[in-house]
Image (cartoon, rainbow over all chains, first blue to last red; front, side, top):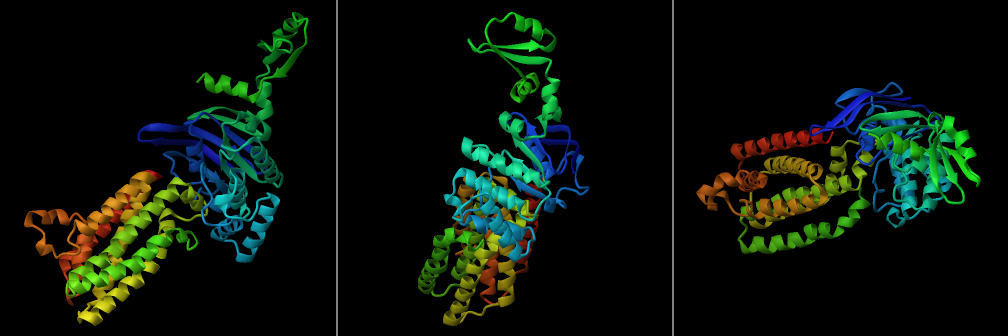
Length: 266
Length: 221
């Protein structure tokens, strides 16, 4: 399990992460949601050990981050595959660097790229979505137990985004724990088992469904004729609906609405 | 790394073919002055490492490749070193061939242990300075700084000329340039001698560059 306990980080006296605690179990997808500059990337870099924490502890299956890097596959934010290499070479090379044997790395690279349907051509010539897939495949080399993804679908078109989502679901289904940062609420809603709202500190956390239930004291009522939306308390819902002659749609609060309420009020 | 250095083929060819030709022409015209040879070899040590390593590190940092490779448990200095060693496999043989040819043509007595020691220490501290620069600044600034410093350390320091021709009041300034000690020590070694003072200067630069790198690295983490 990835365990983060009371983590602090500041740069030049400015606090970026304040007493952050979280955990990720194998076989679940956990999303870190937060605004730009909310400390998501810094937190991820602390977890995989690229930057040191001022206070607090990070353990990955009981080990310190740098020692446990073999247990983690990482796709950093804004990273590009290494130029001049073909996709298979890229994945293969990352396998070698992670200590895989040559034959095993070659076989696994082919297997992953076939599965993710990425052509074996120069990474520079691949589309944005396929570049991201090459990075995810590279992160999966060495069979890591956990996958850390920093905004894995930023900049991708809807089709490529859905392909990456399907890919992540299939990775989760084989028992790997995934921690991803995103500011696409829809992404967290579709993928994550649990979410953390992070804005320097954890503002709220919980099971995605549980969070929605927790906010069910508010319902969103939409007048289907006029398109007008109302936020109605649970106990007032029945009496509110009696006022309508026309059709209405009633739904639970979406993650986006919860996010606006939680993060927006901070 | 070898595959990636294909992108640097033009600069590699320039420094390994054009440079020796230019060197041979000027060396003959200057009647085999050891200082010209020292300047050329210093450029192989200082310019090659300083320019190429700093720019590569800055690019890899900018493109996220340093982070990507870090996640395979590869430290930043090792990534930079693997790149710099590829450059060294081109520059070292060329420099050694030039020194050897010069010794044959002009009957210079080469003090080989000092040449190699100077090459190694000079290369390491230029590598560390380049690594620190690449990690500390953004890519655009590094591209400019490495060019300016590379040329400054080559031509605004006593590399191609002896220290004695530099006006007395400017000499302290030249000691602030890391190439001065390398070039002067090499020039002495091409006359068969060794200077403890220049050697000490190189050791000071080595320690300072190591400290600088550790400082930059600590700021990054």
